Length: 319
Image (cartoon, rainbow, N blue to C red; front, side, top):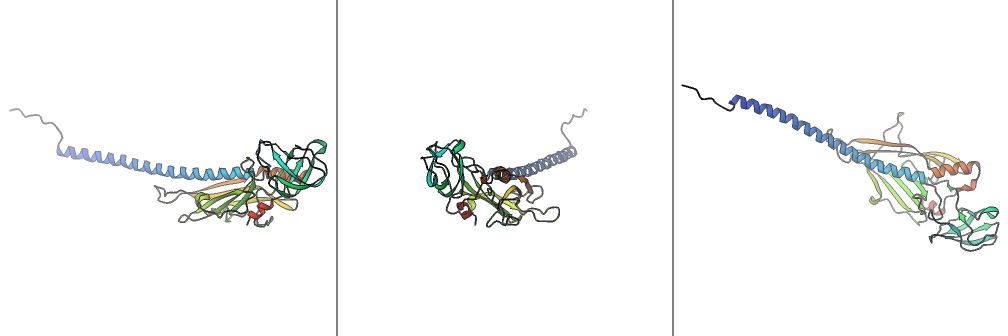
């Protein structure tokens, strides 16, 4: 009698196969979970880097542009709107593009060309009009320029050696000028509120016209970063501020020729692998306000008039 051939697996073989399949599936799932956690970590850090990089790039651009003086838009040619005589006289400026030039008391203007050219300091000034003592008479259409830059384009700090009243501090950076190089004179404050991992702080940016009567209080519409931490101490155990300044004397005042910016931030979400927020410190050690640095060299060596004084409207915005 012949025995029929049997097909399939025995119970033992089936159990062994299931065990092997479960082990392989577990390894694959573990790898996928780890991959997802790694991807989550990368996404967290990428978002953090993107936000802090955007903020520091804006800081770098505006610090570099601080102190620029403009009478109007870059393409506008500014000139006298009428002929004037010598002596202390009133004048009005006009711009070739139809915009309204802006002058202020104390500003030094270079008027006319050739042998008739002179530099006058405005006794009064508002909008496109002012008064000044002219040594020469000037024809209608004589070109007018505001050369140089604001020596205090980055407002010197309250700390020594500058000890500038209501100046910049370790947590508040104050700057002004034609920040966007579009002819609009602006006053900008960066306020750095440092926090802890459980209660992170905020970096604010407050921008208003340089001639505004007052500045608005800091609010949530001005937030650049909302995950700011206290900076780690340096190698000597000293606290590291958000903003640090290199100050040099300029005439009877001071100017800031370099700004160091240090910001520590953390990820918006906890790291999937460690379960904690991941910190990162971004440092810009030598950001030079090029307009201020240039006028520092020029005013120190050849022409003190190139260092334009701070407008009264800016002084009123500092507190």
